[in-house]
Length: 231
Ligand SMILES: [Zn+2]
Image 1 (cartoon, rainbow, N blue to C red):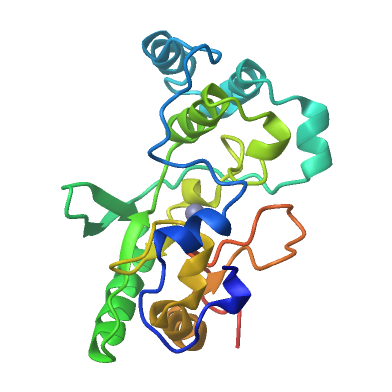
Image 2: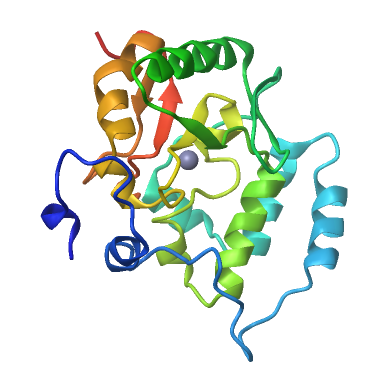
């Protein structure tokens, strides 16, 4: 079953089968690190990052990138825009697991308005991930490396630290109940169709459509607060 053969007009058709078959490159969130795979010392790494990134994150970013094996040449080839960390953040939503997702205040306010408008139309949208700092982004890269992925493949899924839109406090990964988080079948949901029609009105635009120039996979769940970007 491929995405193109999915039935149209149904809510929450993100079945596990569809997810597996349409997500060859995605790392399964539930996948254990295979025995014998390259191991890393998470505790030691985090201590290192903490000492590397106290007050001068930008100055130390080059060291952090080098420690992850992301070369200047690779960065230059990817030509990704740099995204500094947001300076002011506000709670946008708290997940069922108690995690609070942060956005810059205007994006948080607009998210709330958009969520309410969707709900009035019978659509539930939820935040999976919003603001992430450089350290969290580094950990995402590390987790994929620990599962044996090479950097070329990783950088089609995740931006290097310093280059993620999530650093800005303007990006949200969106999901709807019953759908696997951050998987392509999200595009077949009523929630995605609603966003396609209405999100621009609230200042949110899709960052990574199919065939995007930045080389990321198609991410129907990732939206960026940029009021005025689309008429
Ligand atoms: Zn995202």
